[in-house]
Length: 261
Image: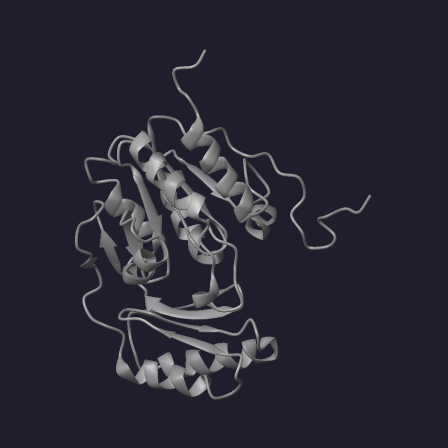
């Protein structure tokens, strides 16, 4: 038999129990709920997932939020017609309750000079995809892997004249964001809301940026649940091998009859 840890694939992992009534559940999107696609605009959202998220949110009495690097406007397009509680752009914006208007957390938008520098990187190779956001930007190089180091170096150089920003390296992507905001600060904001307060915080994510969320829930005595390669890196506790397993877990929770013996 092949040892999956040697091939770079997650070995058999122990999934967590189904969500408990007192959980506050935070879910990353790309690589966690949804399979990674060649470009961000090509991800697929299974119709069943929409129903399961809506049911899970109700069963948790509203204590469920999507926490992503994507803007909330993009989150809403992906999961239409759902408008769940959400945090976007790595904590720079949030929507505290479902259906409400999103609110900016960061004080100022990302400087135009950085957007211009990122746009120039898009000219290096047709496989490079630049995402412009109000408080962040992302440069994806999944289809141009040889340019990863150059992109990171050029973005770091472009940032040298600006304060209060952070450069992050994720799965075939470099991102610039507000250094004061993160998925961890987003958890903190939600946990002060009535629907989330006094619950066990649980964060599920798959990438470097999700580790901020992990730290935030663990500091509160909650549970961090990694997905895929991040599970191998952490090497402890319950985990999921793939987004498909996360979706199946949510579906099982949505269908679970808590009154059954």
